[in-house]
Every structure is written in C-alpha cells, then in structure tokens.
Length: 383
Image (cartoon, rainbow, N blue to C red; front, side, top):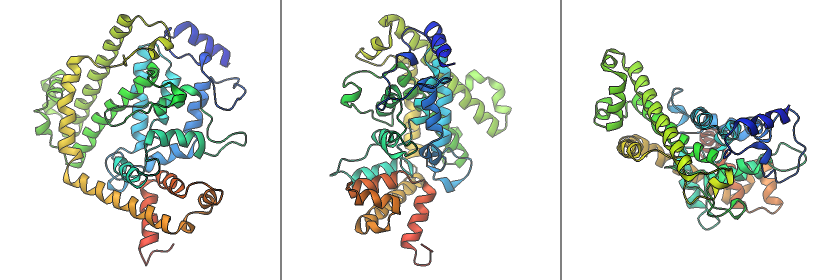
C-alpha cells in the first residue's frame, strides 16, 4: 500500500531526501493511488507516453539508420536512469523520484540530436526560441493528451522541476518563477544531471570506437583512459578489442560514480543540510565530483569534442539534419494545410502557427522526419 511505502521512506531515506509524502503536488488535483506513491505514478505515466516511445528513434550522436548498435535517446535515457539510481541508493535519496526525472529528462529533444534543436531555435528566434528542457515540460504539461480530466500527464511538482532545471555540460537549466528563481534543484535532480554527463561521455566513447571515428591508441594519451587501463591490470592487452573496450569503459564509469558518491557525502556533511529545502536553499550544487576527478575528466571531454563531435562525418550529418529541419519547417509554414488534421486543428483554434509547427517537428523521430522530407520533396514518393 502507498502509505506503507511512504512510511518506509520517512524511516529509511535521508532527512534531506525528497520524500513523496512531502511533494508539492500536481497542477490538477487528483486522488492518490492506493498502491503507488506520486513519483512511482509519474514514472509510469512517463513510460507509457508517446514521447517516451519516440525516443527509440531519436539520435544521440549517430543518426538512427547508421546502425542498430549505436545509442539512441531511449537507450541513453535508460543508461542515465541506471547510473542515477545507483548513486541515489548510495546516498539514501529517493530512487523513485530519480528514476522519474531520468526517464523524462530528454522528452523535449528534437530529431537529429542537438543539431535539430539548434535549427529550431534559429527558426523560432523571434517567436520565443526553442529549448529542449522547456519543450520537455511543454510535452508533459500540454502536448501529451491521454486523460479526460486534464491536459498533459499532470506530473508532480518535483519531477517537473527536474525537467526544467536539468543542466549538464551539454544542457542549460532554466529558471521559471514557478520553480523558484535562484533556488537549487533537489539533490535527486542534481544526481540526474551528473548521471547524464557520465552516461553521455562514456557511452559516446563506446559508439565512437565502434564506428571507427575514434582511435584507441590516441585515447591512451588521455589521462583518465590510461588510469582506467592501469586499474584493470596488465592482462587487458590480451583481451579482444571488443572486450577490452567494454572493460575500460566499465572502469571509467565506476571510477566517476565512486568519486561522485564520496565527494557528495563530504559535501552533505560539511554543509550540514537536514532537509530537502536546506539543499535547495544553498548557493551551489553539492552533488559533484572532487577537484581531482574534474581535472581528470576535462581532457576526455576535450578529446570527444575534437575527435568525435567535430569529426567531419558527424559535422556533415549535423549540417544535413539542420537542412532537413529548416526545409520541413518552411514548407509547413508556407502551407499549413499539409500538416496532419489533428495538428492543423490547433492552428484553426487560434494557436500560433510557428509554435504548432515547432511542436510537430520536435516530436518527430529521425525516421519520421526523413520520411516526411521524402514525401514533400521527392516527386516520385507517394504522399
């Protein structure tokens, strides 16, 4: 029963954890579920949403048709959730809240990764712009239509805060009045932010090596990679390349997660926080790496930026993706009648045509965007 789960949280979670019984609630009042806490219910609503399913065919780094092996937004999301739950459990924080935020953190992403977001932001620059955190919140608040009683998924305040304030090396959190300007997010949100970075960097290494865009011999000059090799021991050189790569990346993740947990435990002790509100009232995040680990991680991030994200093949894919997005947007804008009936209805009801088109394109998978492009621009393709 839900009340037993809440009693368990109150007894065994840390005092600074965000306990479900203290949630600020939902925008639209609902009766509590008899068997699930509010965060468990949020997690389930996210998993059953159309936006979550579409992550399966949205780009992480490599476009979907490049190969079945490479990460998609969905597999990345699941990897973030696994890492974040491990950290949360070690710190006695709320695993259900961490899982819900993890599963929702990329719902606002466009097709074709960050290049798709850049294209939409440029197209919408005079009309409110585009930010995938804001789009994620818009998705769960408005665009998902599954319930008669209210628009969106009607998620709890803390999960929605985790979506809008999500920040990492590649993401910028937003400050909205509703969620407390200049307030730190919950420790659970901070965990997801770092887990996202850990998953992103280490699994892009995996995909980069598999694709042949990265060379392992060059990685041996990067300090943290070399350190992971040494921890595995001299026997790693006798392993086949696939197994060696897996063992090193596994060690890299373990090194970073271990450092993060230990440093955060120190920060919790030093700050003396006693409640979730104490953590939110601090002037900085306390879920973080040690200075030594941050120093060790920096050359790896630089290596990925130069050797993978700026590789000519990735840049070509990104620029091609921007052209797809721009041309789709402009052809819909010139003739909105080409939009699906339910999408066009929103325009007839008075919504801004550009925002409707933006929502429509942002919700596309890579595959659907490519199919739409063919239908609209290939004279021999059936519409």
